[in-house]
Image (tube, rainbow, N blue to C red; front, side, top):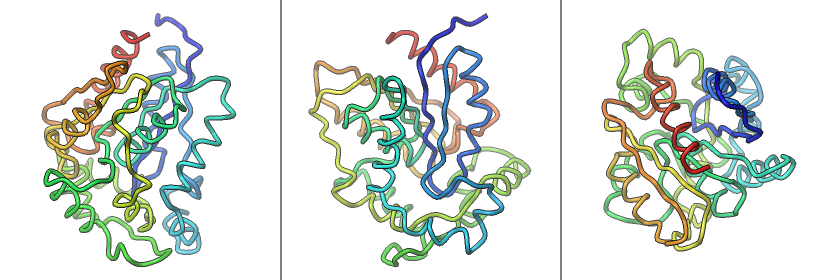
Length: 261
């Protein structure tokens, strides 16, 4: 029997996927006494099948990073207390930006996209992001991740059956504007600002955001009055949230939350 808590966890998903991939995480965290919400991204509150239809994806193509920050800020502000934020991929960057706005009691970033700002350590990441889109300059157009890129970049550490099943279940078109905003001032972090406890998680087999880049992100935080932690998981890919051993990652997060509370 797990101890009960009134704390709320908000799960924030990444790009190219439906928020429904958090389903098992919701059950896992609720069994540990948390209240859990996993709001879809703006304009993505629908089934995977419907979101793949052209008439449903036109609005998705308009999404920007600023839109997402305003959207999640409005959701957080109607909650009874500041939530714990857990974000994956692009969602991890959103967690960092929302933490910066003092909108969370704690934050966990799983394979987080890095904040804006050029460094040589980001060259491979930038190259990958450009490779995930047909044209980052285009306006209000969506782009669907190919199965080949899903296999070799997103979900490269599982069987072909797992790759194929999860791709059909969760992959959806994405806004190219929101990818372009990764390079803008909207994605800048003030690493010296005081912040709530923050945990950054990397995975050794991540082909998008390397452990080295996650560790760079972690080391940039320099406020001596704030807690910032780092954890690397071996033999895990970018989509660790869906891998067979996802409970190990979720359990580590719960244990970390227990310690900081």
